[in-house]
Every structure is written in structure tokens, then in C-alpha cells.
Length: 477
Image (cartoon, rainbow, N blue to C red):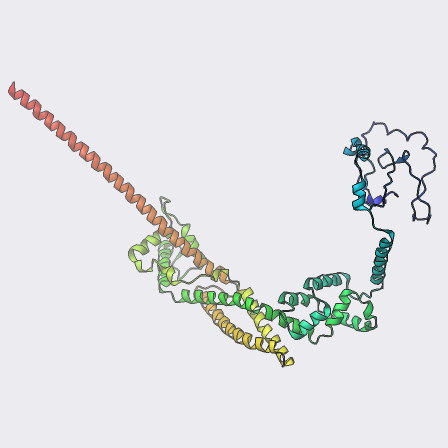
């Protein structure tokens, strides 16, 4: 067996430290001896005879003299990485020759024997034919793009002509929407189409990617059809996402604008703020929504409560009908909406309808596109109307609180109200806990006072009785 190439060797461990003598020279007889003849097929000596068995003279990588083992049958090669220097490694003390002398390798040879030469020749011929075919292939597409296209095609799992048929017939059962969307990344460019047409006479030698694009180039409005298939496949999923978001923002906007209790509460907050600040900063006519969170920052003298605690208590005593103002607000789902994403999704629905209409007019006999368009058009029309209504309502509610609808997202705007409602409820609970604690302490103090009073009264009675007995004793004397 010829030694492996230099690149096949693992990085050798560091050599002996400085001052350690080098390993001893080879055993006598090696210096000056001619090297063993090369294996058959080695470069420079084609057809050279194999080396004779050498059971006592071959130096293995690592400096140890090893015997050449000749198996009884042809065995496959182990493609391992050879370590040149085993000094200071585990292999230095390993004696595999003792294992070789102990084990019976007949079963191993029986199981791992290489197939007959004729079969190997067939496999080699097959590999050679595949290699020649690969070398003769006409490659017109960028290498990375071609590789990714081949991966995508194999993921789809259909031959090119079958995929072409599915696209031509708008068959979403044969070609799923995610596969149609995947193929949109590999729509042939003008330059690629020009190259494919210029080399049409070499079609038999096209690579897999070139062959696929050539077949797809025969589909009329290939890209448009893929867009329709993608849109139709994802339509219901997109509708199920968009509709709840539109409804959530619309409901939240309308509930805030129509809440009488919320207006009254903001009126009370404004009154308290002016009462606290107007003497030094002058009165104001309103405040930004971000001020709601700062109600927690203003604390009482004893630091036991904040301004919101006091506002809750004031409302409970003087305006009990607005304590539950949050019940007039419908904020569920509104804080998870991004207006930018929602607008893009709605615009995507509109564009999808336009493309579908275009294909419906081009394929007047395609029942799949015809029926889908009629169903989708009605839904998208309703969604567009509701989106417009929602957009106007959101702008109105933002302006109601002096917020810019262009720079304020629903998630942020409605999040301020959600946080305020949460703080309001927490303060209600904390007030109740504090009041209960105060009542318990007052009750406890009252009980203690009553006990002290009874004890005092009892002591007075005892003193009176003692004084009476002494007086009686004096009279008897």
C-alpha cells in the first residue's frame, strides 16, 4: 500500500523537548538499502509488479519497524488519517501486533471481502460514464444559483415536465404554495433566457438546473402563474391573520373614543395635576399619555402610597361609577398589531387580487382561477373597506390624545392604556390591603384599650373592696 499524501496526515504532536537525544537510527541493513518497489499504477512506473511480502523490514510512520500483513482475500481500504509521529502519544505504548496474532480474521474477511473484479470494473465504468457526462454538460447558470435551484427542485420531488404541468394548470394539489413560492426565487432572468435559447441545440447536454429552466421557460407568464399559486395557497392563512388585527384596532379605537368614564377620569387627573403644579408652573389644559405612568412616581409624605393610590381612593369615594372605567375599553389584541406589517399584508392582498384578475382574463377557461378570484375578490373588498375604517378610527383616537398616528404604532398607543389599567387595578388591590391592615391594627388597638380599661376597672373594684373591709375591721375594734 503506498503511503498517503501529505495532506492525509494528522497534525503530529510536538516533538521531544530540547535536550532529548533523537531517536536511534534504523536497524542494521536499512542504510543504503534500495526502497521497496512501488505498487501497481503508481505514477512514473505503470504496471510495475507489486512488492514482495516484507515481514521484517518496513518502517511505518512513527519510526517503528512493522510487518506487512497480507490478507487472504481482497479487502476494502480504510480511509483514515495517518499520524506520522507517535512519540509522546498513546500509540507509543500500543502493541496492535499482539492483537493481530491473537484474533481470527476469517469471519471478517468473509463479511468484508471486496466484490469480484468484474463487478468493480462495471462500477468503475459507471462512474467513468457519469464523470464524462458531467464534464460534457453545458452549464449556463451561475454555479451557486444552479446548485440552489437543483436543491429546490429535489425538495419539490417532481420531474421538470410534471412541475410545468402543475404550474400550467394552477394545480395546488400537485404543487403546493410553499413550493411555488420557492420557485419564485429562481425565475429565469433575461440573460439566462438568452443563453438558454442560444444553446438550445445542446439541450441533451444541459445540466439539471439548465434543463429545468429551459422547461419552465416554455410556460407562458411563468412568474405570474407562480404568484397566483402562491397567493391562492396562502390566501386563507393571510386573511385569518389580517382580519382579527383590523378588528382589534378598530374596536380598541372606538371603545376609547366612546368611553364616557375614561373622559371623566382624565378630567380628574388633570384637576389634580393642575392643583399640584399651577402655583409654580401655571395651569395646563392637557397631558400626554406617557404621563399616566408617572402617577406612580409622586409619593405621599410617609412614602406609603403614590398619587395613583390617592386618585383611586378619591374616585371610589366621590365618583364610584367610574371606578370600573376599563370595562368600557376593548383592548384585547390591539397591543400586538404593527401598523406597518398590517398595511403591507393588506397591500399584498390587493396586489394578489390584481395578479389573479390578470391571469383570469388570460385563462378564461381555467375554472380554478375563476372560482378562486370570485371568492377572494369579495373577501379582499370587505377587508379593504374595514382597513380604511380602522385606519381612520386609529388616526382619530391618536389625535384625541395629541399623538401622531404616523409615528405611533398601535402596539405602543394601546399599550399605554393597557399598562394604565393594570396599574389602576393593582392600586385598587393595594389600597384594599392597606385599608384592611389599618382596620385590623385599629381593631387590635381598640381591643387592647378595652382590655386595659377592664383591667383598670377591676383593679379599682379590688381597691374599693379592700378599703371597705379595712373600714369594717376598724369599726368592729
